Figure 1: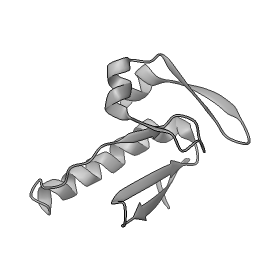
Figure 2: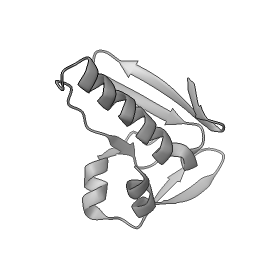
Figure 3: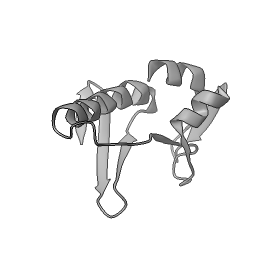
Length: 103
């Protein structure tokens, strides 16, 4: 777990078998900022250490806990206006255009 900014806590989980890193944000309002920071770090590592050999895609879970993920690039192309997400504690709406622009 890392705290990117006050209140922006992200939990990272690496699955070596499937070559994935999963990021879980305690507060989804910080997801665009947190993902941008994580992406920046990966891009820097790719440039400095891996000689641009890493390739990756970013997926967004459509409903928290659903296990259904959509490529962020697909969301950008659809330009969906809103995406519902919920947890056991609350239901919230996030503006996808704003999310994509901030990412």
